[in-house]
Length: 108
Image (tube, rainbow, N blue to C red):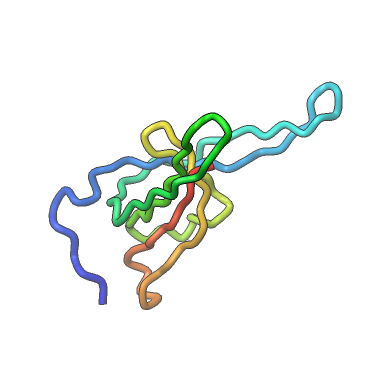
């Protein structure tokens, strides 16, 4: 069974977007982010993976957010947190209780 969060634990705001693909005047595919909704979340963990790039270091961040259960959240969404966009890698519904979701994401 899920543990209850203390008051204020879900104090971070995350925004959900979908990607809309359209063709421009020269028939190139253009991706636009379409805002869906902003909800409260708790950050469960953060990992930083170091990647070597030609001009220095780049940090790729993996996070796990815990949110109240929402049946509309899918892995097709993009999450924005503090100005950084993340793609959803997995969504876990612990014990299928429909109370919480654990969303694992990587930076885009």
